[in-house]
Image (tube, rainbow, N blue to C red; front, side):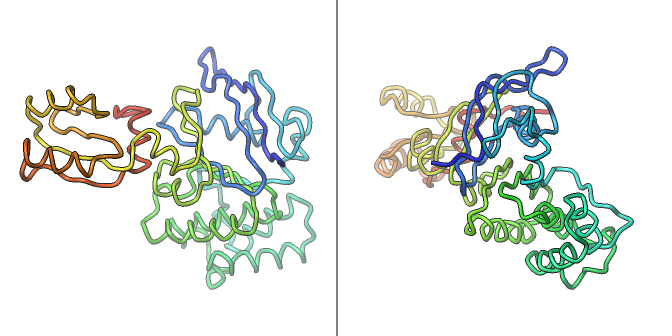
Length: 303
């Protein structure tokens, strides 16, 4: 099995604060690996160490089999990075943003021009090639940043929250492009706050919190393991219902005015609960990755 990334006991400390605490993971060639976690979980710190932007405090990290500490220049030449921030040059046109960036990789001007043309077609921006960046919508800008990350034909693309702030139509357009890239065998390391995005794009997921890895696995397997197949939601639960849950030792979250019950037999439980404890305030739905995320990381706001 070929590994694109191998991290062993990687740690990052900022002024005495441990942002990433001895995490270990691997990215297999051709897969999309997702990093999930609340704000401050250590996701961005992890990927910034991976592409050499931020040095490790300790641990071992190799990309393409090369040590990031000693071969960072070669590694950067073989990967593409789509950062959270919009770093497009507002003084250049759409086409020029790609061509100028391509020159950083010593790609000949003619080849860069042709690559830019094909990438603009790929992200459906060829009709705006001569437009200024300031004229583009937010979704167009994110697609252009993605295209820029592909200008050097990378073997690995690192995406840090690539669709944050986009409307649903723009988000789905980006997803379709990423699915096309994944189908062609491109390796992808992705961070996101969108559970639907993670479930749709990622072959495997790592959920982090407080700089540590909580769980790792395939999306569907994580859902079954940590949230079962179904969830019964009960609004305005009674003390009688709570006693029933305790007597059956049911896996649940008590949120005060709402209770969530998880498990594989919730279809039967739903009928019992509806008949005995509620008539209108009960609902049955399938478990989701969001259920897993909230169960593992909590429901408190992170600033």
